[in-house]
Image (cartoon, rainbow, N blue to C red; front, side, top):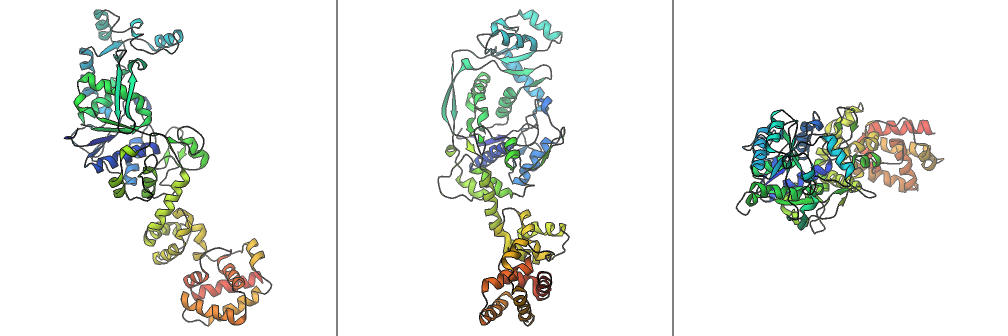
Amino acid sequence: MADRKVRVRFAPSPTGALHIGGVRTALYNYLFARQHGGDLVFRIEDTDSQRFVPGAEEYIIESFRWLGIKFDEGVSFGGKHGPYRQSERREIYKKYVQQLLDAGKAYYAFDTPEELSAKRTEIDNFQYDAHTRGMMRNSLTMPKEEVEQMIADGTQFVVRFKIDAGQDIQVNDMIRGEVVIKSDVLDDKVLYKSADELPTYHLANIVDDHLMEITHVIRGEEWLPSAPLHVLLYKAFGWEDTMPCFAHLPLLLKPDGKGKLSKRDGDRLGFPVFPLEWQDPKTEEISNGFREQGYFPEAVINFLALLGWNPGTEQELFTLNELVEQFDIAKCSKAGAKFDFQKGIWFNHEYMLKKSDEEIASLFAPIVAGNGVEEALERVTQVVHMMKDRVNFVQELWPLCEFFFIAPTEYDEKTVKKRWKEDSAKVMGELAEVLEGIDDFSLENQEHIVLGWVEKKGYKLGDVMNAFRLTLVGIGKGPGMFDISAFLGKEETLRRLHKAIEVLK
């Protein structure tokens, strides 16, 4: 393995939206490949034609484009090991199916679904294996001539892998160490179906990994039970020297309770489990995505990287390059990782703070325009500077910042009751006169003059500022008062002051 270039792959099935667990698997493959100067291959495993969903492949590619995970070769990226869709490789697989049959490592089976169902009823916990295959209809129990005649007549069959009983199968896992499994617990898996002339996942996966020179298979824990079968297939083909190293990642678990993270958990608790919004072509049901919910791709990457892997330090915020430098597959947890979506929101807030005011403003400006306000980008940027530390998502800015762009038409009752005193109208009238006399309406100059006036008059600063805020904002919220009035300018500040005095009395 030392003299081979590291090559890993991400091989989703186009059966719908890409689950966030799949995104994490792809991310870990990407980090591992980049860290070792290797290649990341994108393969589509579409041998199960019954489950194919139109648009799913394009959705998966767009998801990774948004996240910034780049592939080196594969579907839509090119490369010398293509084709990269399994449905386009059926002639390749037939050759390897025949190789196993000729070597006596696999056999034809003609059992109908009804016969298999009857056998399951007859025998508790029935599995098709070394102990039961002798009572079934297959090329191990039938005369050769009959088998050949059935195939010639077009009788449907499957090809099963012949697993010998009493073997200890060793799987070396980069996360879990050495795992030993008894061959008796494995059934003679179907490798090929004549009905659609396509292999099953197990055969296609092994052949592709071998021909595409994959050196490391990093995948979800749910594939761990398949690992011993894949080890046996590599040996059956005589490919022991090129067998990849395995790493089975921990499951992503529900935020609360037990079990694997599902879309239902997201629907129940209000968070996405898909990278992008997805509309099911059959039901037309729309599922929310991290992108549409306002997450930054960098925040999603950072959040996912730490679900199942720990750098061993206190550091939590990592750029993609820093993750490449520090990632260590051996430090991945064996136990499942709880999907703490609140932590995901925290990451997004941190990335909001890390981004420049100009970048956030470019995202916020269309929202401002969408609310009927024409405002220069420079002015939107000023608002973002004052307010971005108060939100987790860009779309949360408008409800908090609306008053910067649109004067209040009504005043919050609770705030009025609490902050508008008997003499507030009189004091605000006086404040309006003070502001009228200020030529330099900068924040610093306003503050100096107004605070001096408050002190000279002996007013309570809190009472003045709370009433002033109500006149400009309509509620008791927002940044510093002179930040607001300086942004609004003298004319608009006075207009709002006079209107509030008139309405509130």
